Structures are given as C-alpha cells and as structure tokens.
Image (cartoon, rainbow, N blue to C red; front, side):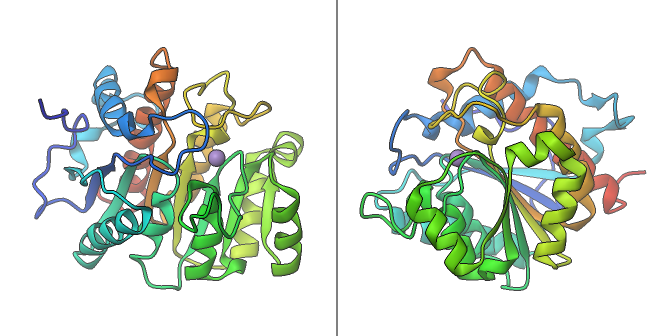
Amino acid sequence: MAAPRFADAVAKYDEAWMALFGVPYDRTCSFRGGSRFGPRAIREASYNFETYMMDHQRDLRDVAVADLGDTPTFGASTEMVDGVTHMAADVVRAGKIPIVIGGEHSLAPAVVRAFPKDIGVIGIDAHLDFRDSYLSDRWSHACSARRIADHVGVEHVVYIGVRSYSREEREDLERLGLTYVSVFDVHERGIGAALDRALKAINRDKIYLTIDIDGVDPAFAPAVGNPEPFGLAPLQVKKLIGMLAPDLVGMDLNEVSPAWDFGQTSLLAARLIREAIVAIGEARGHLG
Ligand SMILES: [Mn+2]
C-alpha cells in the first residue's frame, strides 16, 4: 500500500510553489538503523495536527504544497546522491522550494548540490558531520557538513546544536576554518544569538536549512540513529525556523528512525515541517 501524502500537501505540482518528497535511504547507518522508514512515519504523523495553525492564525491548506512521494530506495550512496540531486534540481529549476524528508543525513548534500553555489547552509545537528570519509564512504551520513562545504565553501556552512565530534574532525575544522555553534552556546545565550552568529559567519542572503532531528534532545526526539544528550528543545528549533523563513530556499529534515519511537519523534518532525511550510508561506506573502 502506498504511504499517505503529507497532510494538507494537496496542491498539484504545476500549481505548487513548494514541493515535498521523501528519501527512504539509510544504507550508511552506523548505529541504530531504520531511517528509511522515516518518510512514511512522518507523513502518517502529519495527520495528527489541525489544518488550522493556532499560533500563526493560518490554514495550512492555503499554502500550495505538492507531495511528490518518495524517491527509489537506491543502492550505493553515489546512486542515492545522483538521484536526489536530480530530483531536487527539477524542483529548483521549476522555481519551487524543495522540502525533503529523510532518510539519513547523507541526503542533505545531495539536495544542496541542486542549488547554485551562492547559497549558505544552516544545519541543526548534535554532530559536526565533518569527516572527509566514514567507513570508506565519502557520502556517509557522518560527512554531511563536509560534502556540503565542498559545494558552497566551508565558510558558508554552520551547524548549530553540536555536542559531538572526533579528534580528526576538530583538527580539520581548525585547519579549514569551519564555524559551528555548540549546543552549550545555545543554552548559554539563546537560539536567537546563536542564529545571528551563524548568519553573520555565513554572509549569504539565500539559506538552505538541514535539520538532523538528533540536534533536538533525545528526551523529545529519541528515535534517531545516534542519540546525544544535552540537546535543543523543540521550541528553539521552531523559533529558528521562524527567524530563517524569509531567507529559506529549501529544507530537509532527516534521521528519524521510527522503530525507536513511541511516535513522538515523527510527530515533532511532522510539526516542524508544517511550521516551515506556514512560516515560509507567510514570509513570501503566499498567504492572505
Ligand atoms: Mn547527527
């Protein structure tokens, strides 16, 4: 049976100015598997919510979003990257904003490659993901920031909420000049100050946002591949989406592994995607 479409993403592709698709891919997973089931679980969870969004006083059905379904499951990571880049490039070329549901974080650089190189990238992540290669795979989920930097330049990508990296990643980030904002900084100074710092460092008008749901604390989002304590609160991510919305050219949300869930991680993921849809819609004047 085909998975349901994302709730309220009922526009036809031609009429949509935002296009959502899933990437059920988790072949480079190194710990808890199953994020290939993320797109289905997140779409199912999306039906929990009212079409009307109280906090925005807006109806999500007033935003023209199409759900294109899922990509194939793919084999090797290079095959996934080519397939996802191709699909995202079609959406970008059509002048629409892509919203991609993972699947694992390896999909993010594949989507970013579909854009011109003059965008900046903000990531939400517990991990720096700055390895040049992991388990002999340069397109591993553990290399997402590194591959994104290959496309937009290392000075134009900042991950926020970081609380884990390897010794090698630390040497590389210092050598190559990568900026990141640790979760401890966010807890100390607030998400607004963290985002300001990131945007100043990036210095780009157009921003792509990649949300690894493990950036959120495992108390709120336990169903992830590599859980790390001390994480962000859901409201901080909501606020960040709202602040970024005017500049967003695309977004993905990845690493939900539903088998480790009582449903709350998928619900949060679906709610954050709904938040992005309505916030970008408001910012672009596509609503009332
Ligand atoms: Mn991560």
